[in-house]
Image 1 (tube, rainbow, N blue to C red):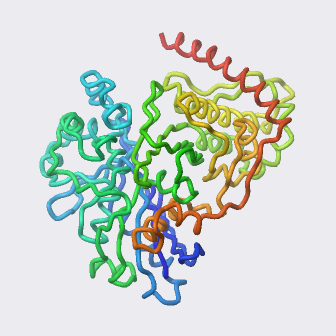
Image 2 (image 1 turned 90 degrees about the horizontal axis):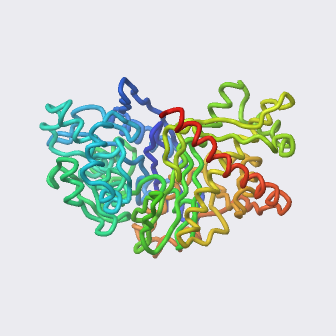
Length: 490
């Protein structure tokens, strides 16, 4: 028996096919482009999503000996990307991605009118990337599209429709559009008013894991799958990653290390804080996933890699023995402004403590440490609101680096549990499919059977003591650089 998990991401779509024992039996991947333009425009062609789904599934299926044993499918998707479609579900324009920031004026208007109400309803603070400001921007600047649209959908709805002919979203993706109440798991009238939308222009919202439908005849033919394959409702990629790494119990913490590092803590009640931790509905019924994002993390090291001309492995090797020589270097990785828990865009990246003896490997070490310290700052915020954090389930690019993983382990003082399978979003989607189909009775049982760990890192007491002292200095240094940048701005 086989289950299909497809992750429709921002830069590409990946599909895995897993058997009931957790063995990966097939993989496929296809990239696509982002279209960036003036004024913060970042769009994507929704047709590319479907082409990539078709290609990646067909590639994954090639290694399956008996396709009739493929029984169920689910999706992990990028969140917060919005697409206007007509009554036939044909896109009326490119999709406005979650990175699109054109609606800054409209976002300011919403913030002034609704204030913190937006956060306490939706779980997310006001931001131009969400639907309320985007819809206002579209109505003002592209009224012919806004008025013609029969429905506004995001990635999961578009692909669900292409698979089954049914327009369905889930609470985790609806939350990324800032149109749903965390408490009621339904479209919210205040948020719809802010966006200028009505419910009849939005998809049906079903729980994650709910049955959506079987493949249409056309979809089955395109995907080279049996028409009997059942499709179960998917989830936002970070929530799928939490399933794919086994974070399914209250107190579990996911550290997802991509371009942005995301910390997702699971609790029995939504977590609202002054620092704007973002609570959302977890796939496990009755639980919530509370998200905090470090918006310059993986992208910061990529920036440094590019300007040095080295690859990641060489930087790792060179920085491995530089803990002592980089002791006095404090590298603040705010290339997109200081994110959570500071939320001050004007405070930019900077480095203190350089001497002539230092080289690119000392700086690489200090940058990795700086991102680990920002992770610790974020974990401290969770701890201040009742989380007892002793271990993290770490996935993503940094989990492939033995050095950066151990620095993170020592700087945070947390055990790191690193899954053997790196495509955790796809694994999470396959778990949704398998559990929805009924092969497993719940997600905990599925994760116990299907999620395995390649290594567990424990904090080194000597390194922990070293990083406790350095973190105190790093933390104090932030106040000085904040004052500098804000004084400069004024």
